[in-house]
Amino acid sequence: MAEIKKICVYCGSSPGRDGRFIEDAKAFGEILGREKIGLVFGGGGVGLMGTVARAARDTGSEVTGIIPTFLVNRERPEAAHSTHTIVTKDMHERKHKMFELADAFVALPGGIGTLEELVEQLTWIQLGQHQKPVLILNTEGFWNPLLALLGNFRDLGFLGQHAIDNLLVADKVEEILPKLRNAAAPVTLWTLRENQGVSENM
Image (cartoon, rainbow, N blue to C red):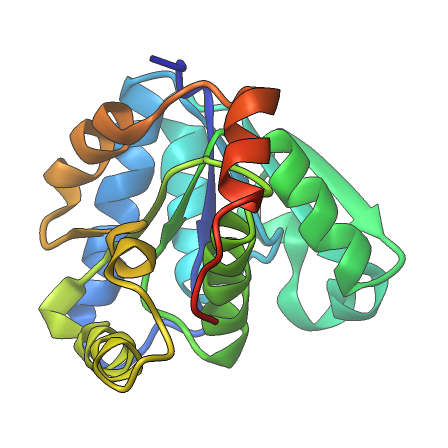
């Protein structure tokens, strides 16, 4: 089983309208710090991003913020107090760097950017490009509409059940690390070739 040393967290640059979102972001950051697991995130010091980063940093996690140049003024990376901040030229470079550094991915509540980053990782798994665990924290049922949509894709013949199974779901913050660790597995060249050789519904 592969060891999870760094987790990439996708989440909103806004706090959302339910106080539970902030509470869970803070709690997860604190868990990362206590477990000495590094955090890789979007670099912003606002919203859920800033909350999870500050909590992780304050409890001992190495925090790496990755932010494109055009978002520096808008999302105030200095407010996150990251251990390291990497400024990229654009979103593509940012996402590549986040993928490169992380051993697993967790999506907290967020907006369309969070959704896009999450779905991209699921697509890459489906195409056999990686086997890093991907998990959503379903705070107050936030991700239920996405799970229903994926089920609809499956029922209408556009997605296999195995693709849905690639998405781990945690209802409580305390479930995140155990689920990720259980799912973590080393990626081998043979496994990637095997996956790429299997015809999958898109």
